[in-house]
Length: 332
Image 1 (cartoon, one colour):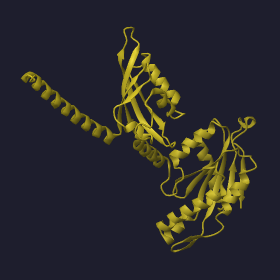
Image 2 (cartoon, helix red, strand yellow; image 1 turned 180 degrees about the horizontal axis):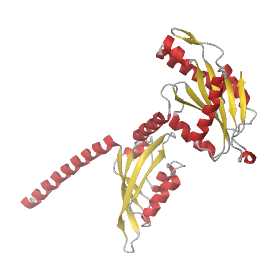
Image 3 (cartoon, one colour; image 1 turned 30 degrees about the horizontal axis):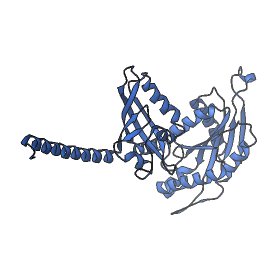
C-alpha cells in the first residue's frame, strides 16, 4: 500500500523538526560548554539526576558515564565546609521558604581539586498535594572568577614590593588577634634609609627593603604577623603579651639583623632600626596603639637611633593615673 501524500508530508515535517532540534541542541551544548554552564534536572522521589550536557562530570575529573548522576553522588562531592549551607538552601526551597535555590559553593573533584560553582534551581513540578516532584536548574563553573577575586583580595591586602601585609591587611589581622587576647605591636622605622635613596637611588632602596624583609622573616617565628606601612616603616604583631619572655630576645634579634651591610648592585649600604613596642589589650583601637608605638619609636630616634623603646599600657590599678608608665630606651 502506497503511503498517502499526507503521511509523507508528516514524515518530512517530522524529520525537519528533528534536524532543527538537533541543531538547537548542538548550539546549546556549545554555548553551555563555552561558559561552563551545566543544566540539570532532579527527580526528587528517586534522586535521579539528569545532566543535559557532560560538563558536570568532566568538571569533576570524571570520564563520561564514570560518575553516576544522582542526588547522593552530588552530595558526596560537596566541599565539607560548604555542605551544610548548600543543603540548607536546597531544602529551604523545597519546603517553600525560598522562591528558588541559589548558592555559591565548592565541589571536590575525583583528585580532590576544588571547583567553585554558582548553583541555582527551582521546583517545576508538584503532585496534587503540592509536594515537590521535580527541580530544574543550572550549575556554572566560576572557579576562574573566584581565583581572580582571591588574587584581587590578596593584592588589596599585600604590599606589592615586599609581599608583606599592607595597612589594610594589618588592620584586619590586628582585629583578629584582639579576639584571641593580649598581644604586642612593634613599630619599626629604618635609620638613615633616606641616605640610601639619595646616594644609590630609589631602585637600590627598593632592593634594600626586599632584603630587609627577608632578614626580618628569618628572625621571626611563623606566627608573627609582618606588615609594611609604606616607605621604610614596618610593623610586627607578636601573638603574645608584651611581658612574655620571647619579646625582648626577638626585638634584639631584629635590631642585630642589620649589623651586616646590604649588598646592592651599585654599592653596599648600612641602615639601622628604631623600634617602638606597645602592648595591646582587647579594648584598644588600632589608631591609638599605633600612635603610642610611634611615640615610643621616636624616643629612640631622639636618643641616637638603633634601639628599642617599650611603651606599656596601664594596668587596671593605674587607670586613674594621668600617664601610663613608659620604659627607658634600650640601645642595642
